Image (cartoon, rainbow, N blue to C red):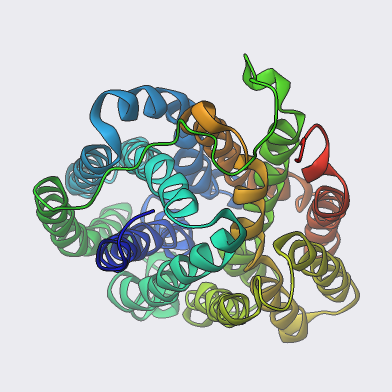
Length: 420
């Protein structure tokens, strides 16, 4: 166990990293309507490729990230992840200059690559740096850093790139010539250059700072959390890990539905872009409330698997509320899903990683692959909403996900998990 001084220092550094990737991750809710407008996209499904490109990077890069961490260690791996994110941010400059949607998606994919490495390092780090029983509490603290940043990022970026959004939409629609329309779109696209240039500079600076910091390394080879068990030879001998991967996949999918798709949902039911551009912040502030509760309640008053079960039940009830209501009321129910989702990652990750011992890094990488749920489920929503109502499409996706998460909380996390 680290000394108290090193422990606090480590928590602080990782908290800063969680703030950074929270800020970058939750920009997608603003980028979806912005790029649909600036790149002249024809459908919500096409615009939702923003989340697809970003989150699929986790699927492809998670396992390579585990091998990279095996060579670099956690600290240098985090630094490398930040540098890769900076490169992704820089790609937004030529993308804006050419108004090339594919290049924007490439930049998002590269940012996702960096985040895959960063998350593969930081999540197990925060899980095993202290007692596994209180891992959910530590991850809840990280979650506050992550979601406060996420709540601020769409407000900041939205104020820059979508200022006067409804007026811009009107001007583009009424442009008297194709040339004038293109000029308006080019002017709009240029709005991302300054914020993403600043973001790249900050990410590169943080990468250098982390590289030369005194952040302590940790070892995950002792299997110190589960004693008296036979030595495992393969990750296939941990069924609860694979059930956890599916749980992460579905959880991240519903989290992105509540956070990034809420704006698209609002636009589909007739709310103006000037209002919908900040809806992501409402979801994330409700998540912050959930994380605060988790810090004080876990594990003192409630076990992390019990918190996960209650969160899943809340998710089911709130998704039913979305289905049964319309207008701003349904938006409120979607935003409140942030509260239901808050304690899910803090509970799922340590429950799925517990007892992996020497397989911890690789197991964490497999779990990080599950983040691809954020790529798939929004696209499924985009496809469904073209043939049914937004509330029905939303409910048909998220309700089964919450039902599975409830199963994992009650039973799935214990399958194949030997205890002393």
